[in-house]
Image (cartoon, rainbow, N blue to C red):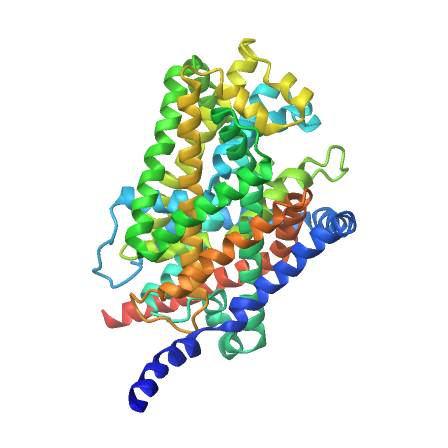
Length: 519
């Protein structure tokens, strides 16, 4: 009996010793403290964060812009250079997932339900911005800026880091699945010391802040859709918490079933997403306008890309660069903690070239299709006079009710709302099952090849990721605050991205030399 107790106790002790508790719990504790401050001192905390955010955007905006443009250019260089032929795995290894499965997981993991929310409404915000009027046609530039802020530079962040992490995991076979480990070729022994620990703490902190922000942005649209569909008058908070709990249950179920569950949910999400887009395109009555405006917007983006990517508004005449471009690049940097790790892990067997170019084709391509179809549908209603979208927004100052009103212009509007709700929940669940998977991997000091985190650790992260958004539902200023936290966290994350990129180039160059010597 005594021997049995000893044996039984030895296993959990061993498991506990494998967990990096500092990296797991310290960032979460910091986020919880911040959330309490937001709740107890909303005015004061908002003022402080806004001040820091304004300072960084105003004084260091060039920093974000240079990293963004540099990363996008570098992604193409890596893909088209000799680095592109490196296989993320053994030289003769084949991809584990089909192109569609791989692309579906990559796309749904990288964007969450934000893409649906912003696809419908972001053009309205550009329409209202004075900088758009300065450039000329509000219609032309409203449709172009959506593609710019969700296009090559955001996906450049994702894909450069994805191949760096994929190289680290599948080629160098490193068992520490952390941000700091990707910096080892540069940091050396300091990877296991204070600099490496600080990098990992910052990464998990940014991950949690970005996650909470994402939930805060688009969840109210789900609440509004449910209220409209069911005709209920429950408080928004109650509906939002219900949505969050359902989403948590879905992605927890998926993540506990490993990559098979994640892949299945990603496929379902992708089918629902393209089903929604196809319905709007075919039955929205604006098909010609949607396609022609989208085609023109892509051409305008290609023609003006460098100018848009380097625009700083030095006189601060409108603050467009600070309010939009710099904010977006910072927000994408924060999301780079989770999404590229996941993309890198599922890209085993693919060459670096196919990962980057395929990522642009499927990931950025699907993003463009979303904004072209959904955004230009609303823009088409505005330009044709069928429905004054801008006037409704100016009257209500509520993007969520404006989007619902847009959808109600479609035939079988209730069916469309059902499809929207299902797609958004699937997007959230797919994004956060991949985040929970990455966070669980981050919690381990080491993970062997093909080893997945224990179910209990994945379940722990599934719950931790939902607790903060639920708590923040009760704070009206939470979204603005968390957005500010994300931008602030992105400042050091940008430097880490540069370190990871340089470390990858150094290590990949050494690997190619090793391969040549073998031959």
